[in-house]
Structure formats: C-alpha cells, structure tokens
Amino acid sequence: VAMWFAACDPSAQHVCLQGWVLAGIPRTREEALCLQEAGVIPEHVVMLEAPDAVLIERSLGKRIDPVTGDIYHVTFIQPDSQEVESRLTGPEIHVMEEHTVSELLKYHRSVFLLQRTYQNCLKKINADQPDVDVFTQVLTHVMSRHHSAALHAPRVLLIGPPGSGKGQQARLIAEKYDLVNIHCGELLRAASADETSVGELIKPYLESGLQVPDNLVLQVLTDRLSKLDCTTRGWVLHSFPRDVEQAQKLRASNFIPSRVFFLEMTADVAMERIALRSVDPVTGERYHSVYKPPPSERVQARLRHKPKDSEGQLRIRLKDYWKSAPLLHEFYPDAVNVNAELPPHSIFELLESHVVRRLPRRLSVSGMIQNMS
Image (cartoon, rainbow, N blue to C red):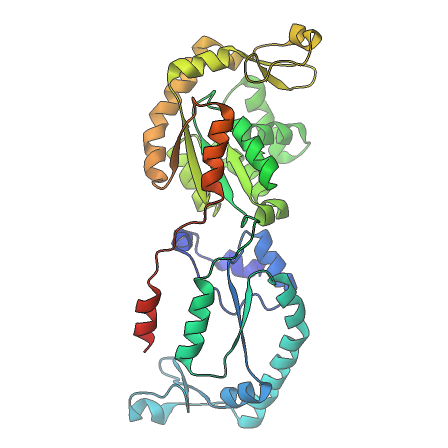
C-alpha cells in the first residue's frame, strides 16, 4: 500500500476534491488501516458478492486483446468486430481455474475482518444479476446519507486576523466533537523542544522571532495531520495557512479541509481585544480581562503581555493578514464568513451549524441510470 501511495501522481491529487471511486484495494484489514492512516477514508463501501461457482465460471470466460490490452468476456462483454474476436486470447482453463480458486481462498480468509473495518458504511450487493440492477443498487447506497450523530472525520480550518478568537473557537469545536485541535504555533514550539533534526532547525527561528520557513512548517504540520487520531477523528486547524502560497502547499500535501471559516472583524476591535490579552508566565495559560479573566489576584499580578501583542507589532500583523485575505478567499471560494465581533457563544453556534451540516451532493441519479439503460 505504501508503494501504491508513492506511485500516485501528486499533480493529480486536486482531482480527488471532486470525490473518488477506489477499486481493488484494500484487500485486507491491514491495507484498510494503512489507507486510514494516510487519510483515505471512504464514506460508502460496496461489497459485491456472488457464489464461488459463478465467479469461477466468469473468470474462465475472460479474454484479452493482445494488441490493445482490452478485456472481453465470451458472454458478457463481446467485441464489436470479428477481427478483434479472432485475435482474443485466454489462459489455459485448468491454470485459470486453479488461480481463481487460490484467489478466492485468500479473499474468504480476509473478508470478515475487512467487513468489520467498514461495518458502519458497508453495503453488500448481489453481483449475480444484470449490470443495470447492480449499478442501481450501488448508486442508491452511494447517494444515501448515514443517519448517525457522529461526524465523519471533519477537517475544519479557521482563518482570521489576530484577536478573532480562532484558538477559543477551535478549542470549543474540538471539545464538543472530539476533534484534534491543531495550533500550528504550538506544534512548532513543541518540535523545537524535541531533540530532533527538524526541531534543531526550527529552534533558531523561534528564538530570534523570525518566521519559520514553509518547508519546515509543512514537515511538522503534515506529520501531525498524518497521525491516526487526526485521520479517524478529524481535526480543527488554525494559525496556518497565513497566505495563499501556504494554502497551496497544504493542498499539495493532500490535507484538504472540508470546512473553512473566515472569522472577520475590524482593526479597532482586534486592537481592543489584543490589548486586554495577557499570559501567565508560570502556567502558559492565556487570559482576557473581559472574556477570560484570571481566577485570582495572585495570578493577575504575574500576568505579562507578549511582545508581539504590542500596538506596533499588532498593526503589522493585521496589515499582513488583510493583504493575504483576498487571495485566501479566492482559494477557498466555499468558505463561510463569520462575524467574529459577536459574543463567543454566538460565533460557536454559527460555526457548529456548518460543521455538522453535510456537504451538498451535485449528482443526477436519474440521468446516470438512464445512461446505463
């Protein structure tokens, strides 16, 4: 499976934004788990079944055109011309039968665990019937919506200027829906504290207050997003991307958010919020004199303001955000704009209403069935 992923063309990954159909893999539970770790999690799984005798009979009727490589069948898929039919070849019957029986034995040994892996989205369909009937049943399942209170591993991205409450809203969403809260800045600080080669490269930038190069940020971020908890539970990401170049690199890494929100506010409100923000140097906890006041006078006395929250630094950060925002809006045309000047609970309700909403389907079922007829 790892070799299969390595062979995939990165330039074609954007096509998967439209949806995909995967056939022939996974064949075992181990391969299914490997796909999950890579972020490949199907919404619908169809298992086509037929008696072994039928499958063996079908395999014996398979024919191949040695010129084009096209596959035909003596009963179900016949060539249009006698010229093609005359050059079709097939394996020796006893060899093909032995091979098919061997493959069926392997399949039966692994199918039970494979079914359990996808039990919440699996549909078994009898393949021993006309193609149009099989297709209709498959399409009906694919177009169905799972009636489950659980979210399907949502991938949420929060974008907004400093002070828009991205961290607070990410925490609320993650806590309610058991998503993994991914703060890019915290990831970099944690990586810098580790005695790894990447951490050693990141440390000088953080210590000097310089921006960490995108290639190092992506290396740390994609490694975290590839973890099993992110691929199975979903994630909420904030503080990255900050510009359209970073957004393009994130997409090229095949980490594509399913929900994008822009938390918008004016510069005056952002300045006011940041001015009231402080950090406890002992615990690292962040407080706000209005929205999250310190629990005691003792904590209040030791609070400090971060240098980056000074008025001069904040104006630079806000200017950088609004310079990048228009291109980010173009890059994420389906993003939802949210008024971040509302009370935190109102913002959370707006975000939540979109997070739990299923994405619309753009597919004509009747048209596809007519094309099969």
